[in-house]
Length: 280
Image (cartoon, rainbow, N blue to C red; front, side, top):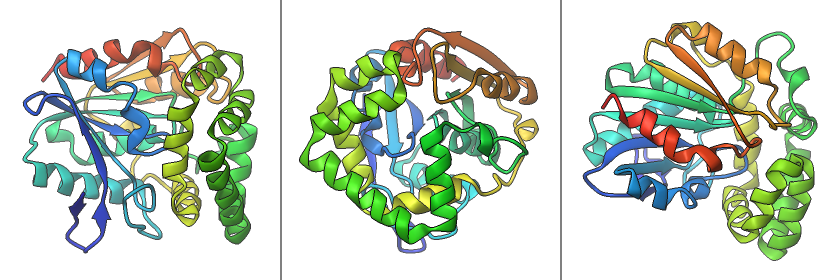
Protein backbone atom coordinates (compact mmCIF):
# COMPACT_ATOMS: atom_id res chain seq x y z
CA UNK A 1 0.00 0.00 0.00
CA UNK A 2 1.06 3.57 -0.67
CA UNK A 3 -0.63 6.90 -0.05
CA UNK A 4 -0.93 9.19 -3.06
CA UNK A 5 -0.48 12.94 -2.87
CA UNK A 6 -4.24 13.52 -2.77
CA UNK A 7 -4.58 11.18 0.22
CA UNK A 8 -5.98 8.14 -1.61
CA UNK A 9 -4.64 4.69 -0.82
CA UNK A 10 -3.27 2.59 -3.67
CA UNK A 11 -2.87 -1.16 -3.30
CA UNK A 12 -0.50 -3.22 -5.42
CA UNK A 13 1.18 -6.62 -5.66
CA UNK A 14 4.96 -6.84 -5.98
CA UNK A 15 6.41 -10.15 -7.22
CA UNK A 16 9.85 -11.25 -8.34
CA UNK A 17 13.42 -10.24 -7.54
CA UNK A 18 13.82 -6.81 -5.94
CA UNK A 19 16.64 -5.98 -8.39
CA UNK A 20 14.79 -7.36 -11.44
CA UNK A 21 13.69 -5.26 -14.39
CA UNK A 22 10.27 -3.82 -13.52
CA UNK A 23 7.13 -4.55 -15.52
CA UNK A 24 3.95 -2.75 -14.52
CA UNK A 25 0.87 -4.94 -15.00
CA UNK A 26 -2.54 -3.37 -15.76
CA UNK A 27 -5.18 -5.93 -14.79
CA UNK A 28 -8.18 -7.06 -16.78
CA UNK A 29 -11.78 -6.21 -15.98
CA UNK A 30 -13.35 -7.69 -12.85
CA UNK A 31 -9.91 -8.58 -11.57
CA UNK A 32 -7.23 -6.85 -9.55
CA UNK A 33 -3.60 -7.11 -8.42
CA UNK A 34 -4.18 -10.87 -8.00
CA UNK A 35 -4.21 -11.18 -11.80
CA UNK A 36 -0.47 -11.82 -11.67
CA UNK A 37 -0.30 -14.51 -9.00
CA UNK A 38 -0.25 -17.29 -11.60
CA UNK A 39 2.58 -15.65 -13.52
CA UNK A 40 4.74 -14.72 -10.52
CA UNK A 41 6.99 -17.85 -10.82
CA UNK A 42 7.48 -17.18 -14.54
CA UNK A 43 8.37 -13.55 -13.84
CA UNK A 44 10.89 -14.62 -11.20
CA UNK A 45 12.51 -17.08 -13.62
CA UNK A 46 12.76 -14.32 -16.22
CA UNK A 47 14.36 -11.91 -13.75
CA UNK A 48 11.30 -9.65 -13.86
CA UNK A 49 9.93 -7.69 -10.93
CA UNK A 50 6.20 -7.61 -11.63
CA UNK A 51 4.26 -4.76 -10.01
CA UNK A 52 0.47 -4.92 -10.33
CA UNK A 53 -1.54 -1.95 -8.99
CA UNK A 54 -5.25 -2.09 -8.19
CA UNK A 55 -7.00 0.64 -10.17
CA UNK A 56 -9.06 3.18 -8.18
CA UNK A 57 -12.10 1.64 -6.50
CA UNK A 58 -10.76 -1.88 -7.11
CA UNK A 59 -9.33 -4.15 -4.43
CA UNK A 60 -7.29 -2.13 -1.93
CA UNK A 61 -7.30 1.15 -3.88
CA UNK A 62 -9.55 4.04 -2.92
CA UNK A 63 -12.05 5.26 -5.53
CA UNK A 64 -11.50 8.25 -7.79
CA UNK A 65 -14.86 9.17 -9.38
CA UNK A 66 -14.65 10.49 -12.91
CA UNK A 67 -11.15 9.08 -13.44
CA UNK A 68 -9.58 8.66 -16.86
CA UNK A 69 -6.82 6.57 -18.41
CA UNK A 70 -4.34 9.40 -17.98
CA UNK A 71 -5.39 9.96 -14.36
CA UNK A 72 -4.32 6.38 -13.67
CA UNK A 73 -1.00 7.01 -15.43
CA UNK A 74 -0.39 9.85 -12.95
CA UNK A 75 -1.19 7.48 -10.05
CA UNK A 76 1.28 4.90 -11.36
CA UNK A 77 3.93 7.58 -11.79
CA UNK A 78 3.56 8.35 -8.08
CA UNK A 79 3.81 4.63 -7.27
CA UNK A 80 7.03 4.05 -9.19
CA UNK A 81 8.53 7.27 -7.84
CA UNK A 82 7.86 6.09 -4.28
CA UNK A 83 9.35 2.67 -5.10
CA UNK A 84 12.42 4.22 -6.69
CA UNK A 85 11.76 2.74 -10.14
CA UNK A 86 13.03 4.78 -13.09
CA UNK A 87 12.80 2.43 -16.09
CA UNK A 88 10.05 -0.12 -16.76
CA UNK A 89 8.04 -2.11 -19.27
CA UNK A 90 4.24 -2.22 -19.25
CA UNK A 91 1.79 -5.08 -19.76
CA UNK A 92 -1.96 -4.53 -20.05
CA UNK A 93 -4.45 -7.36 -20.45
CA UNK A 94 -8.00 -6.89 -21.82
CA UNK A 95 -9.45 -3.72 -20.22
CA UNK A 96 -5.94 -3.09 -18.94
CA UNK A 97 -4.74 -2.61 -22.50
CA UNK A 98 -5.85 1.01 -22.68
CA UNK A 99 -4.17 1.71 -19.34
CA UNK A 100 -0.92 0.18 -20.60
CA UNK A 101 -1.18 2.40 -23.67
CA UNK A 102 -1.77 5.36 -21.37
CA UNK A 103 1.45 4.67 -19.48
CA UNK A 104 3.31 4.35 -22.77
CA UNK A 105 1.97 7.72 -23.84
CA UNK A 106 2.25 9.67 -20.57
CA UNK A 107 5.51 8.19 -19.25
CA UNK A 108 7.23 7.53 -22.58
CA UNK A 109 10.79 8.50 -21.49
CA UNK A 110 10.64 5.86 -18.73
CA UNK A 111 9.03 3.03 -20.75
CA UNK A 112 11.09 0.40 -22.57
CA UNK A 113 8.16 -1.27 -24.32
CA UNK A 114 4.42 -1.86 -23.99
CA UNK A 115 2.51 -5.13 -24.42
CA UNK A 116 -1.23 -4.91 -25.08
CA UNK A 117 -2.86 -8.34 -24.73
CA UNK A 118 -6.44 -8.78 -26.02
CA UNK A 119 -6.95 -5.02 -25.81
CA UNK A 120 -9.76 -2.90 -27.18
CA UNK A 121 -9.95 0.17 -29.34
CA UNK A 122 -11.23 3.38 -27.68
CA UNK A 123 -14.89 2.81 -26.89
CA UNK A 124 -15.65 6.39 -27.94
CA UNK A 125 -14.96 5.47 -31.57
CA UNK A 126 -17.81 4.54 -33.89
CA UNK A 127 -18.96 0.94 -33.71
CA UNK A 128 -16.62 -0.23 -30.95
CA UNK A 129 -19.22 -0.57 -28.18
CA UNK A 130 -21.48 -2.48 -30.57
CA UNK A 131 -18.64 -4.96 -31.18
CA UNK A 132 -18.11 -5.70 -27.50
CA UNK A 133 -19.05 -9.19 -26.32
CA UNK A 134 -22.57 -9.39 -24.92
CA UNK A 135 -21.85 -9.16 -21.20
CA UNK A 136 -19.25 -6.37 -21.51
CA UNK A 137 -21.65 -4.36 -23.69
CA UNK A 138 -24.43 -4.83 -21.11
CA UNK A 139 -22.16 -3.96 -18.16
CA UNK A 140 -20.90 -0.86 -19.93
CA UNK A 141 -24.36 0.43 -20.77
CA UNK A 142 -25.80 -0.40 -17.36
CA UNK A 143 -22.90 1.31 -15.57
CA UNK A 144 -23.44 4.40 -17.70
CA UNK A 145 -27.23 4.58 -17.67
CA UNK A 146 -28.31 2.70 -14.52
CA UNK A 147 -25.42 2.74 -12.03
CA UNK A 148 -27.59 1.73 -9.05
CA UNK A 149 -28.82 -1.40 -10.80
CA UNK A 150 -25.29 -2.17 -11.97
CA UNK A 151 -24.00 -1.79 -8.40
CA UNK A 152 -26.60 -4.28 -7.18
CA UNK A 153 -25.62 -6.74 -9.89
CA UNK A 154 -21.92 -6.52 -9.06
CA UNK A 155 -22.74 -6.92 -5.36
CA UNK A 156 -24.50 -10.20 -6.22
CA UNK A 157 -21.46 -11.33 -8.23
CA UNK A 158 -19.24 -10.49 -5.27
CA UNK A 159 -21.29 -12.73 -2.99
CA UNK A 160 -21.21 -15.53 -5.56
CA UNK A 161 -17.43 -15.31 -6.06
CA UNK A 162 -16.77 -15.43 -2.33
CA UNK A 163 -19.36 -17.97 -1.23
CA UNK A 164 -19.34 -20.41 -4.17
CA UNK A 165 -16.02 -19.97 -6.03
CA UNK A 166 -16.22 -23.21 -8.05
CA UNK A 167 -19.76 -22.52 -9.20
CA UNK A 168 -18.79 -18.93 -10.01
CA UNK A 169 -15.81 -20.07 -12.10
CA UNK A 170 -17.91 -22.61 -14.01
CA UNK A 171 -20.49 -19.95 -14.88
CA UNK A 172 -17.74 -17.62 -16.10
CA UNK A 173 -16.17 -20.40 -18.13
CA UNK A 174 -19.38 -20.85 -20.10
CA UNK A 175 -19.35 -17.15 -21.01
CA UNK A 176 -15.72 -17.19 -22.14
CA UNK A 177 -15.96 -20.26 -24.35
CA UNK A 178 -14.28 -23.68 -24.44
CA UNK A 179 -10.69 -22.56 -25.03
CA UNK A 180 -10.64 -20.30 -21.98
CA UNK A 181 -12.88 -22.58 -19.92
CA UNK A 182 -10.00 -25.00 -19.33
CA UNK A 183 -7.85 -22.18 -17.94
CA UNK A 184 -10.60 -20.85 -15.69
CA UNK A 185 -11.79 -24.19 -14.32
CA UNK A 186 -8.22 -25.47 -13.99
CA UNK A 187 -7.75 -23.14 -11.03
CA UNK A 188 -11.24 -21.98 -10.04
CA UNK A 189 -10.19 -20.77 -6.60
CA UNK A 190 -7.60 -18.39 -8.07
CA UNK A 191 -10.05 -17.06 -10.68
CA UNK A 192 -12.82 -16.52 -8.11
CA UNK A 193 -10.44 -14.97 -5.58
CA UNK A 194 -9.28 -12.35 -8.09
CA UNK A 195 -12.86 -11.58 -9.05
CA UNK A 196 -14.04 -11.46 -5.44
CA UNK A 197 -11.28 -9.07 -4.43
CA UNK A 198 -12.00 -6.82 -7.43
CA UNK A 199 -15.66 -6.72 -6.36
CA UNK A 200 -14.83 -5.73 -2.77
CA UNK A 201 -16.54 -2.38 -3.57
CA UNK A 202 -19.22 -3.04 -6.23
CA UNK A 203 -19.51 0.70 -6.92
CA UNK A 204 -15.82 0.65 -7.83
CA UNK A 205 -16.51 -1.85 -10.61
CA UNK A 206 -19.31 0.37 -11.90
CA UNK A 207 -16.85 3.25 -12.09
CA UNK A 208 -14.35 0.92 -13.79
CA UNK A 209 -16.83 0.38 -16.61
CA UNK A 210 -17.71 4.07 -16.78
CA UNK A 211 -14.02 4.99 -17.01
CA UNK A 212 -13.53 2.38 -19.74
CA UNK A 213 -15.99 4.23 -21.97
CA UNK A 214 -14.46 7.69 -21.47
CA UNK A 215 -12.00 9.24 -23.95
CA UNK A 216 -8.45 8.03 -23.49
CA UNK A 217 -7.02 11.55 -23.74
CA UNK A 218 -4.78 10.51 -26.64
CA UNK A 219 -5.03 8.45 -29.82
CA UNK A 220 -3.28 5.15 -30.61
CA UNK A 221 -1.37 7.10 -33.27
CA UNK A 222 0.19 9.24 -30.52
CA UNK A 223 2.20 6.41 -28.99
CA UNK A 224 5.92 6.66 -29.70
CA UNK A 225 7.28 3.76 -27.63
CA UNK A 226 7.59 0.25 -29.12
CA UNK A 227 4.39 -1.76 -28.65
CA UNK A 228 3.60 -5.45 -29.00
CA UNK A 229 -0.07 -6.23 -29.62
CA UNK A 230 -0.99 -9.80 -28.68
CA UNK A 231 -4.14 -11.70 -29.60
CA UNK A 232 -5.22 -15.32 -29.11
CA UNK A 233 -6.64 -17.05 -32.16
CA UNK A 234 -9.57 -18.51 -30.19
CA UNK A 235 -10.51 -15.29 -28.35
CA UNK A 236 -14.32 -15.01 -28.28
CA UNK A 237 -14.39 -11.70 -26.41
CA UNK A 238 -12.08 -9.51 -28.47
CA UNK A 239 -12.32 -9.57 -32.28
CA UNK A 240 -9.11 -9.94 -34.24
CA UNK A 241 -9.84 -6.71 -36.13
CA UNK A 242 -9.31 -4.69 -32.94
CA UNK A 243 -5.81 -6.06 -32.43
CA UNK A 244 -5.00 -5.72 -36.12
CA UNK A 245 -6.19 -2.11 -36.12
CA UNK A 246 -4.24 -1.25 -32.98
CA UNK A 247 -1.08 -2.71 -34.50
CA UNK A 248 -1.68 -0.73 -37.69
CA UNK A 249 -2.47 2.57 -35.99
CA UNK A 250 0.30 2.55 -33.38
CA UNK A 251 3.41 3.73 -35.24
CA UNK A 252 5.97 1.32 -33.79
CA UNK A 253 3.80 -1.74 -33.15
CA UNK A 254 4.07 -5.45 -33.90
CA UNK A 255 1.09 -7.81 -34.06
CA UNK A 256 1.59 -11.21 -32.42
CA UNK A 257 -1.08 -13.87 -32.91
CA UNK A 258 -0.74 -16.94 -30.74
CA UNK A 259 -2.61 -19.95 -29.47
CA UNK A 260 -5.27 -19.70 -26.79
CA UNK A 261 -8.27 -17.48 -26.26
CA UNK A 262 -8.82 -14.39 -24.14
CA UNK A 263 -6.50 -15.89 -21.53
CA UNK A 264 -3.75 -16.41 -24.13
CA UNK A 265 -1.28 -14.55 -21.91
CA UNK A 266 -1.28 -17.55 -19.55
CA UNK A 267 0.23 -19.59 -22.41
CA UNK A 268 2.71 -16.96 -23.59
CA UNK A 269 3.75 -15.05 -20.48
CA UNK A 270 7.45 -15.89 -20.81
CA UNK A 271 7.60 -14.59 -24.40
CA UNK A 272 5.63 -11.48 -23.45
CA UNK A 273 7.85 -10.70 -20.46
CA UNK A 274 11.04 -11.38 -22.41
CA UNK A 275 9.94 -8.96 -25.11
CA UNK A 276 9.35 -6.23 -22.52
CA UNK A 277 12.78 -6.63 -20.95
CA UNK A 278 14.86 -6.99 -24.09
CA UNK A 279 15.30 -3.25 -24.65
CA UNK A 280 15.89 -2.40 -20.99
